Length: 394
Image 1 (tube, helix red, strand yellow):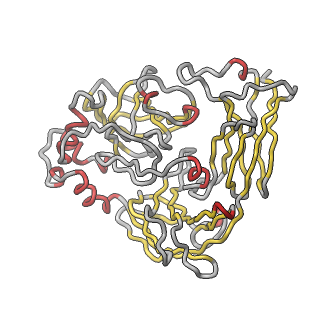
Image 2 (cartoon, one colour):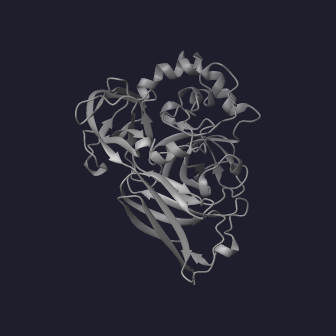
Image 3 (cartoon, helix red, strand yellow):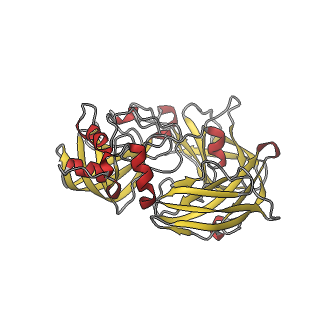
């Protein structure tokens, strides 16, 4: 988990065990359990037929995705809690409908997957989608509904198609997952040490997927951290190309041990690792180095020196890298009117001011609408303070 997230949220293995086995780390996403049954067959029925199940069920092909900000519409707003209302807009071509009136190309909304229960669609893949309509006429889904990649939806597809259950369909959820996980995912094992050869004990070791779209990176981790001898094993890695990283913070010293496979200090120098379904990769040994961390303050001022209503105004600090070592933080002001960021690794960041729209109306507070938000790059090499100046929107 990157440094900002470690300081801001509690780590949680909020992964739904059911039809959507999604490996990786989540934050505080909690799903109301609609899975009434013990076998996979019964679970499939509960997702499709019970009174609280999704109204629309279909197979679909994801054609494209984009990220938008603002309210999604009822009932999704009660489920989507992403900061600033950021969510995915997914264009899906319906291949086969099982429940509800749905055909052609549809728009499916979901969260970003950063604690908001958003489902991580991949462009160009097929899915079994369980969804409900929202006020906007679009559809809404999440990891709580049963939506899953088509190749992992065998028990549900056989139920929906009226086919006889297989022996696997009669397994309980955990037993089914234990049996089929190795068919869907890969495993990566190795050892991490310092440059001097000392093992890194209790370091966070992560595989971050490389993706072209501007979506949250998918991360698979060793939940047990690295062992006293520096060894690690990451299970449940979805097929794809990944960057392997390790880090261990020392908050008292304002530093961290960090590094990329095969033993480099920069994202640009990391060697990608390709993982296929069923792979067991071993011998992934690499080293880390110690890196200083800094405290950075941001002040927001106006071009005409007029006072600002700071309620609803925030600062986004964003690294250009997309991996588990990168720093990404949304920050509100403190009691002194300063926007602080702590334990920031050295590097170049894109900093933006933003306004949190009213949750119900999606509108920007009138007193802030006349100001154009700032977007600028900053270079962090020491404890620093930066001034962000707002100009009028006219």
